[in-house]
Image 1 (cartoon, rainbow, N blue to C red):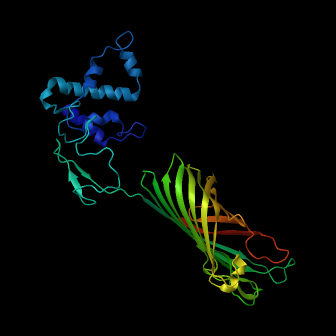
Image 2: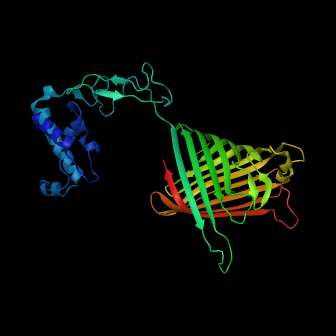
Image 3: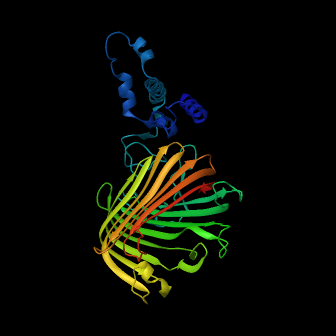
Length: 406
């Protein structure tokens, strides 16, 4: 018994840096009240394999096998010299043991219990005390699991361009500032139900000496919220109900022009889609692709003067359209400090088409500094255009700045 206690005390403070740590089940018999394990006597009394006394072979055995033999020796010494000190048998499943024994299941445990159910008779964070153990009381703290995962990514990008008035190629100096905040709040109860929420906010300004009417013009402006309810159908596929809504923060102007071309809630667009989503999460690549054959698109323009600019009838505030939608969100870590994230959006009501492809290339300089390249091609044949203009649009932005995720 003293040998067993000394060995247990030794392993309670001993640290081994290799792969074979104290979490290995080899050390399990040392951490519980004295228990009789039939496997110990079977291994001790078994005839050695092969010829000879096995002494040389024992030295050549792997480290974990040698440790099992050492533990068996201590336990057998206890079993033969002091059997009255052995409190339990591993095969006895009816007793009330002050610790867990292989094969034992507590009577009050329901194997199929839902993790979301509150523990009966105990408040959240309360303590339940198990029967007395040999060396004192064993306690376990019961906490309600948290199925929410919330992350926030912030970025503040700055670009400066300076040129003297007599620069031989011309041009003008300008400064630009871009602030981005992305908030993800995702729920997954590990029982086929998911609820994901993503809030994207992006607002950027630039100065221009050649603009006599505006001190600042927006170069990027987005407020978008995406909510998804999903029920797992198979391994990576979910039945999903997705709601995407977006507008902007600030009035949109053009250089030396007082006319407002867009504004907050002008337009506001929201699309509700019912379909299936494919989700794949790999260490370096994630994708979330939704295919929705049933989609309802609602567009609202608060400024009636802008109604026709966004495909509405003159004098109208809103419009409904029904069709199909495809939305793909992805992120790929190309190299250690280089990543590419994007969003592909497609909606058609079988009369007109809206397609967008947002691309953000992020070059991480260090923990707080990064360079971002934003490429945004877009197609929309449902808006009014001037003669000679194309339905294709393009936006590009390159910046250097501060970013932080928590």
